[in-house]
Length: 460
Image 1 (cartoon, one colour):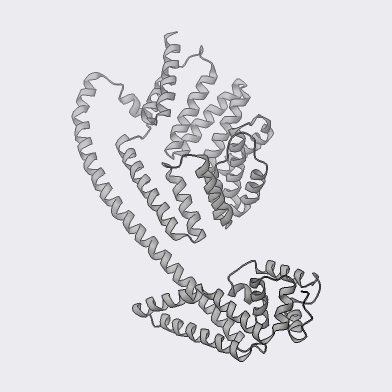
Image 2: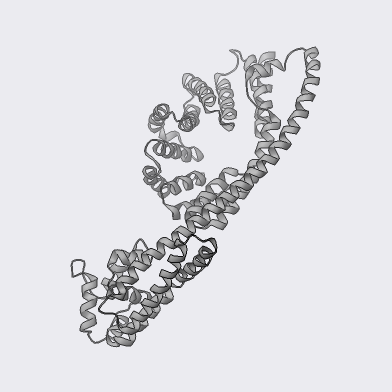
């Protein structure tokens, strides 16, 4: 009877300590509880004990030990016929197996979970879907996991919430950047992320993929602050979860007194090490931030010059177009001369010349819309009936600009590269519809050239 009472007391104490984040003390209580277990205690209680030990190992990334503890707990629930707890234990075992790259064990868990899917309700149902997504990503990559994520989010369980942070990570890895940004924002709405360093890691990755480098750097700095704090906690707690160490601290009072002197020396050394680690961490953090900024700037400049080379090729083709009048050719050649100048400055590899060239090319790329406007206005002056007809068909100024690029000699692919828009064909389809072209009619470029030579009367 006394052992049964001690078991319950130790187990209850372990739960409270675990909730408070005192993992070493919680593990010590679980070890003591396990020593008190006897046949009078329901086996489910031992199953819960094993699962809680697994949770502590999991929290400190020791997935191999977490799998061992979760497996023991799962077997206990299965043997006792406790189906609901057995199914919930499988969720934790499957998740730890994926993180330990044990796809074979994870597959076995998934198969059993699918057979018992009816038992998953509320947050457990979300975890069930997430296990399937994680395993797919592990075996086939993030792109293969995206259809599973989309199907899951399209039919969300009415209870509980998804783990938006993990979904954002997989979306970002698969190149679904808009979905990744939406998911990481949902994470911030659903949870308190002020102390969640993993959230800021994913936020940094998503913002970097979006090209929002300033916000990405802010997220990275927040992650570093939280990581610093966690490192201090881990060093001071000295949590290694070796059961022999827990038994060691149960030895005689005399041995405990002998350890006091050793522990005092240890803590003095530990404080010195922590101070050194803090300074090293600060320097590494600054170095990493500097490297990130340099990488961001390098990538930005390389993209500017890649865009400049694409535009130079397009402008050379425009300058030779038959449909471009003298005034338009003069504008094109003037812009082409500026592009050649800044590209030549970049090639000189002079830091001062490069800084000036970078500023000039950035200005040129940013005012590309103004250049397109001047091209359209040149067509308005030289071909007023044609331009009036386009407007009468409901084309916007932007769509008319798009048509002008066809008329100065660019094809659809070149236009897409020039306006830096991957889905340019969508706009082409809209324009074809407004001009009355069916799916199988002549191509848009030829139709526009015919209209330019023989413009019909406008509909206005």
